[in-house]
Length: 127
Image (cartoon, rainbow, N blue to C red; front, side):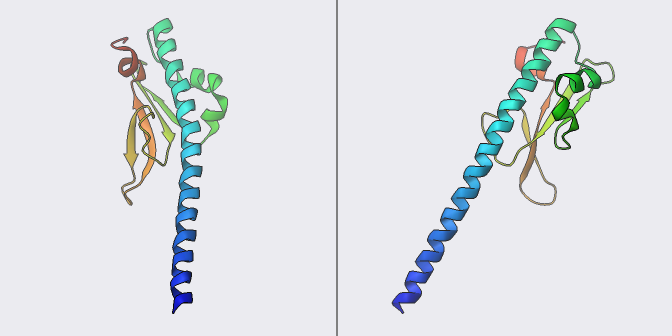
């Protein structure tokens, strides 16, 4: 009877430590992604200030070739380049993450954040 209780406590402790380890790993991964998203957002703001428009996809691809090849990062410029959205992968709801979280339609989990019109959101009405 005592060994059964010890086993349950050990299993519970193991499960908690495993969960905590996974959460720490996800947090570290998402924190790096947030840092990259802030760099991308700053690029858009600077580009808009200098050019009075959002970059064409090719300009974004030239500046961030690895992100342009990453299937989890997306950039959609508007047809007139007066608007744009970029999306990046996330798992946790971090308050420091720019943009709005997007939830899966199949499960209640975050799969990405999207930043629409970063020039307007971050710097006021640039365009």
